[in-house]
Length: 362
Image 1 (cartoon, one colour):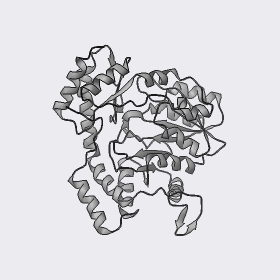
Image 2 (cartoon, one colour):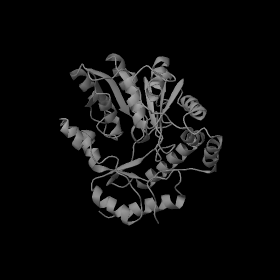
Image 3 (cartoon, one colour):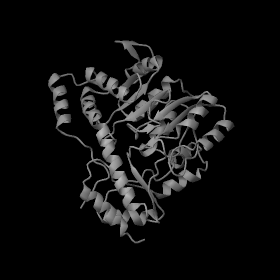
């Protein structure tokens, strides 16, 4: 048996929708993109959506439209995909890192407050709802208000996640999503910014379209970050299925936790009260990771390591002089293993994953 770590769930509805766009001849950015922007914004409980080419470009545009520039410092997590911090560098600003919580893998509000008290040049908080679990928003929102920070949510892995009944992406100045193929909904590549701020959204639309509001009149230095109707057609069908996908992910995660939580050598994911975890990844912790992942591979179980090192230990960030210690993030980076949890898993495959792991001998 071979079980992949991820598998996009694409059906006849997506094929039909894409073919309708192809038959129309309007395959570039257009009315289908506008429909996705509106539908996704409504799903996230906000007023506006701006579609982009990727989650990375969404982050970059959001920061630029909040005025983040070379004099600014942006506080973020050292434990995420590198695009989170790179988006800060793209604005010529400086990333500042705070350590994470042991159980959630998200920014630790206590560590965030320490960094804010030490550095008055921090203007923005860029948090990440990692693996599909919302950050602890109450203390982070309090800190953002107290220190008068812009707040950007990296929701690339958390489509539909809830904190106290409120969708991620709706707490800050902007929420940024990715539609990469492994995400909870997919368009191949693509991203989307959501916000309630009318002026911010107007600026975002300029930046993604070469700085032009009127054709051939360029008001700012912009980019070509436009999504296509083809991708949006996929996105609209995927959005209709997103809640269903998430419920299957949650059900699969519960099955894995029920079958594995009693193993003393493996730590299953935590879900704090008041949070809805949508399990983009089902990430466990194992001390002897190399041996365990070799065993998984030998037995046909796909896995991922998200992520094997902190951002600040990456060679490029080392060349920039980052040498701080983030012990919780560093320990997590040495232990995390993501197991298959995607909605295309069968009961037979879930049984196989649990049974195979349970007989692993270290």
